[in-house]
Image (cartoon, rainbow, N blue to C red; front, side, top):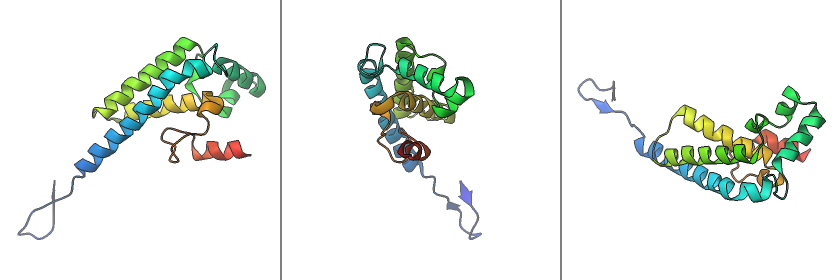
Length: 152
């Protein structure tokens, strides 16, 4: 890309390709590690026969908040659509596949949005095991608003 400046000289604007390359690959690595943890830890921790079954937790939240939109606003997760072990497993492997695609350089807005939605769904349904998060930016992990809500 050329920029205007000195009429006798053409200047090339910086493209920042190396920054984009490194950022998206590292983000893909973070999501890959996060979804690998979900794949291997979800069922023993939060599966139907796990320590704190997520389906039971979602049912308690639904009954306490009256269901519907109130339940979703209280605990935003895609797993309101289905909370079986198969649904959790499928979502974990879809997230792992998308994160590997990002790691390999296939970065686009729908894929990044899907990764964020999937991981945040696991965080919100994951109770104490996923509630503390491990990135202050909220990329995978609870949002700043979620952290404040949990303190009160």
